[in-house]
Length: 532
Image (cartoon, rainbow, N blue to C red):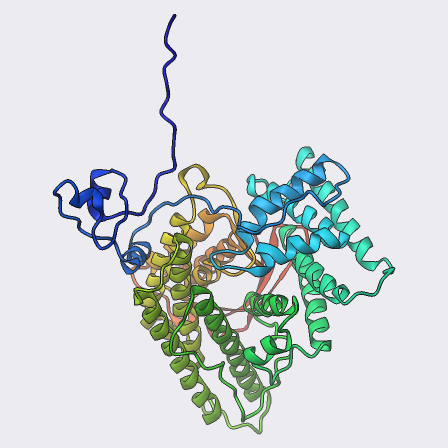
């Protein structure tokens, strides 16, 4: 009787352990300060790699890591009644893939639990979740939601049917007036924003976002004089506490994506009272706290940038205003204060990363790198508010290069080898806005082309931002700016007269094209359709 060859059971490899055991490729017992595996055999245990070293690797050299796993605590689907197997499949896909990707690098009570719990009790949310899961599966398979393929059209039709079901449940008169009804509408607004952006309908997405912001405003949660702490206190003890930051982040996304859009409830320009963002704490206790703090600073700075733009526009239109080329004292003081807060944030962040008591998962380490990249980008945007013209961006070439290095390593570390080309989506902004800013503002030919290449090859959707759209616009801007200039060797080769400033953009719903208005140098307006 022939023997059956026994196969060795495959076990997941661990990346922890002391340096010596890693080199020897043996399992480490991870004893502290020295492991028994080394000391028991007479070897010297070289200790463990610190999280600062792991972070440095992410910041300096690309590496690969496994896919994220579904969060702990997600409720099962035993209590959900599905109409057919297709609904169940889409819901399962949402549970295991969409919710995981949407939360990005940071913990999210909304995507990790609240949303799935709400889908058990609210039919409108359930069908919106099913629709989003279906569209995400279509997108993650590498298929354009705008494709004319018959099979793709069938899947799109299913998602549309589910979305329509959600709307019908939402507009149907409620048999019981429960306190959750307002929250159900807010959650549905967030899901509809995601559904519309997946379908390339930015106008529809903006309409749902504005509706949600108006609802929050009518409830007293969003006002110009409320800071983040006051807003959090107002929503404390309710699911609204988790929803408000999501709407604020979408509000900020939309205002950075569409140059002419004002932040919701943004106060009009006045030559006084320019509030800075909330004060950054001296230290952070978690990566989530660091993220929340930076988000608050970014929101305040975006608001400040809009005030600066309002000042310049009003000074050009009002002949009675004295144009000196310099901002009024109030705006200059506010700019300095914003810079101090960003510097304070970086100090607190570095202190947190060096704290031996703080242990970070690989996902959190990537989140730390992302936050550092965002801090660089918003610093660049803040610095530009006192520029006389766009040639001053040339002095920040090193910062733009740093952004591309961090983005390249994040894009590599976020994928495993078998899924490197799989499209990725998240609710929050990640690498796209920073790369887009570098591609449009940096005129160094090497750094600029690297930023565009990263956008072109990444196949990502981050909230409202899309990598294909951003790459196409950045590529066209570079072509127009460099046209007729010969070989570009440095940023200085692109004169001010050739440089483009985007004024506004609008999308054709359901089509892969964008209408862009921009100003070239100090000349008049130029308008162009850009396709991808």
